[in-house]
Image: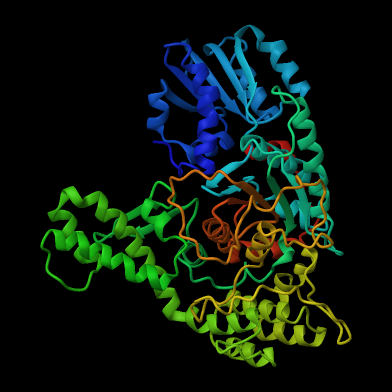
Length: 591
């Protein structure tokens, strides 16, 4: 079975691929070769397994840019991005001598005329099929997508960038393919900001490209659907990406070095093990949005249940014990391995928590929320910040605390900032703090400056952990959108939604409806949110929480990429680097 949940983005994308590429393959009984570029490799890996392809009579998967042996008796399927680099590599496969009997070509997106004509002029007699798929985004999770373009942050926010408009155009094209894949023609709105215009520009581009896409659609002109697309910039909530989060997924990606969703850990015998954290691991899906306190409690219980079923002696569950059990019970190996991975990962997270994160969290939450655990307003944020600065925390942790102090006051004075810079010893790295201004976030302010902080939803009634009181601002936005409470002055319509939009009769997102099972298909409307400049794991979690509370509206969230506090700080620091080298956006997939 392909990865992803039944109603999720991954399954939707896999079905789209099956209905086009695979359906065309099935018309002949011959086994075929599938040739992919780096982007389409990621795309296919995200939504299917090799066994799924084998079932569909695809026997070999090759890299477009690597040297390959000719197989002149076989047909080749090319699934690739419509870039000059990909088209040149394709042409090289058939000139001067063809590597394959014939080719079926599928582009992720619209192929420019010059590239198409070049391909046709050189290889027309070998091409049996040429189609544009309209899938140039990555389905990251059931309700999360990215444009697989972390470099977009620099090209949009760097004052030296010469590629901002081209980058926004490319993101707009990718957003249109997302809407086309979901068969949605949404009303488009954006967050108005007096300092920044990227959200407005992107909203205009998306709306224009969507209209043109559906005018040219083979099925005829499409009417607006019951969906909303909201576009906003990273600077709208600078707090959420900086806080230490204590839910499992967000905490793991912040504190542990997880690259390409792969967690590396040492086994009992000292060998290095790798575990992929994705939706094929149902335990990961079950635990990822839970607080670390619940995760640490639940995993040992699960392990005990298995050991009890095999009459293992009671006692503390440790990695060593598990290794012994796995030797004795080969049949339980897979079940135990899954739980061992998460026991190890949760232990790693808790180690960091005990060492320093617990001490940081109280100060961070007080600064972010503006009040302490008892609800008493923080009158002097400096008193909250000082203990962090006086403790031997890491430089990055101190920078995060200083930023939260500045955000809590909507900016600080030059004098205060200079004191912070000297205290944290970042005289040569002031950009970590100063460059937030490029995102429209106030850093320096005069004593007379007054800025109204946006009002937040009252969540005092909800049960929360003392060190997890902050709620991402985007969750307020999602709930307001679903309940038709977004202020049209703050969220202008680039194009109107159908008059009937109200989250398709959605109830308050704060009501605790019993979440529907993961296999239930949603029949209501969709709310699609796109954040320019990266999304956090806590914001991704918010999309699932609101969807579960409001059964009639599915929330899908996306961005150019997913960020962690460390990656965002490094990106912010890099914004003031000298004139950027010109970067060809079309080649992003293959860079």
